[in-house]
Image (cartoon, rainbow, N blue to C red; front, side, top):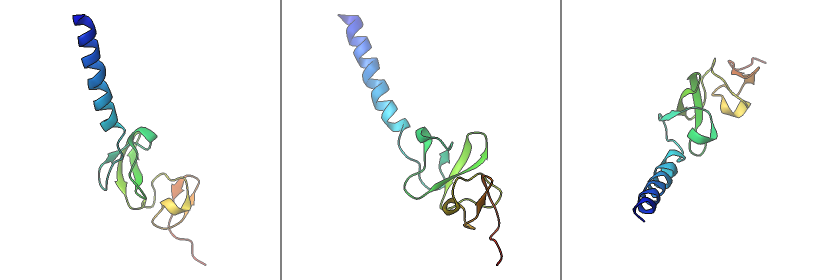
Length: 87
């Protein structure tokens, strides 16, 4: 019976800790660009290396991106934020 109590306690601890692991990150908090360590709302993860980033309102030029709307310049080409295109 004691073993079950220990197992139940450990399971409860992992569930509570697991819930905090999956919470979204706020402005200037650490992120890694995955769904497990994502930024909240409209914030974007500006990666500075493999799985090392910071949540920002937009991604600066030279950093990895997926869509134009993620970049401060509004220009995502070849998975990198680029300077604004001139007309």
